[in-house]
Image 1 (tube, protein in one colour):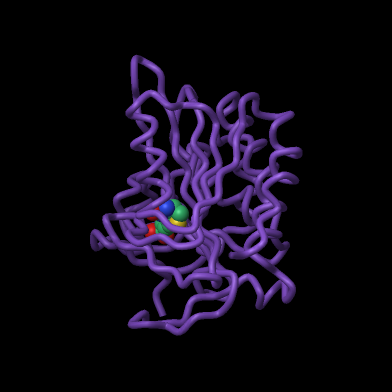
Image 2 (cartoon, rainbow, N blue to C red):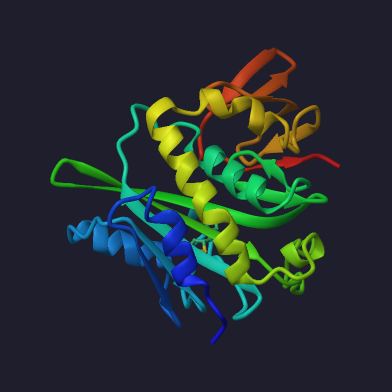
Length: 250
Ligand code: BTN
């Protein structure tokens, strides 16, 4: 079993988040699925759930999320959460993770962390409402050590390429306080105050992109609500659906 600085994480986060607990499991189907099950069963205390191995990791758009034991960090944070507007939350989460880990990590709208045009990490946000209270489950998968492309067109990036001594535990310790602070800022004030910080790391801005629903144009950045601004032949449009994926065009 890998070393997890669970106590240090708890010491840093519990002053920010009352009732916070940390749990590390050797194996589970999916940390997101587990925290969603708990939320639906009324267990809503703020929880960080880390899995050394996921047997059915979930990605966005119904895709699977595969990760090799020891080579990646897979975890979810579940907590009660009632923002006025949820739009832009995945961008805020990506921002906290990128800023806490390395100055050179970029953000690819809406949910990915990129380095040198390769995916370094992904984010899956789910929400549950029980008894009139809403709960958010923020799932994050980060490649820590390089792994083969395995059918992907480009090999994913790994945190150890930017931070050679990186371990999953150290990465988690660095990012957790920043993540909790951003989530709390977002709950109070939404995405707008975070937009300039996102813009500084936006890897799509100024590039020609294509969307999975067939749109093409130049990415102009993100709006104050976290929508992608796309300049098409007919003018600028906003894309705010998280059901869409975007890629830079070669
Ligand atoms: C994506 O890029 O499609 C999102 C990937 C999210 C993966 C993480 S790993 C921890 C958490 N549990 C899951 O089943 N998925 C998220």
